[in-house]
Structure formats: C-alpha cells, structure tokens
Image 1 (cartoon, one colour):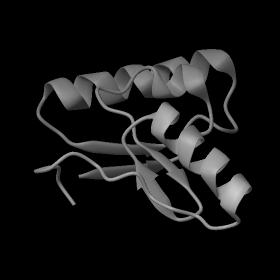
Image 2: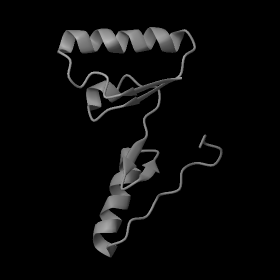
Image 3: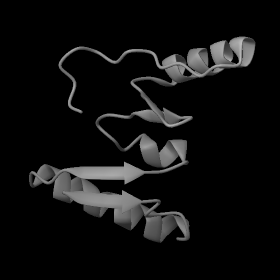
Image 4: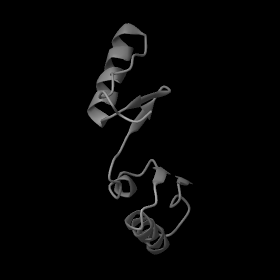
Amino acid sequence: LILADEPTGNLDTATGEQVLETFVRLRDAGRTIVLITHEPDVAEHADRTLFIRDGLLYESYDDMHAAGQRALRTGASEAVPMEEGMPR
C-alpha cells in the first residue's frame, strides 16, 4: 500500500508527470495507491475517485455537492450513503 499525499504539489510539470507515470507502473505491478490531491488533472489518473467534505466520504462529486447544498439550506451536514458492499 502506497499512501501519497499531494505527491505532485511542489513539483514542476515534467517531474509531476514522472511521478504519476511511476504510480501507473506500480499499479500495473499490482500495488495499491491511495493518492490525495486537490488537482483535478492529477485525480484523472486514478481508477477510482472519492471525495471528502466536512469529514464525510462521497462516491461522486455530484453527491458531495448535493450534500453541501443541503447543508447550506438546513445548517446541518449529512452524508449521502455510499453503495452497499464498498470497502470501508
């Protein structure tokens, strides 16, 4: 298991691409990579993307956004249930 928190955050574009290419090779070799990023172009390299808002985990950006809109209207945060059988 490789945990990568903003691995390209302080890198120039070319070096960042080298890091992402390395992750692809590692994934293809069977490694699991958990990559945290705020960069949509980095997230596009992932096989699966999850979103976190207000300490809650969402399966999609749309679910996260909808929950945020509900929270703004009601003043309370709520999670949109994730699919049954998903890893925890």
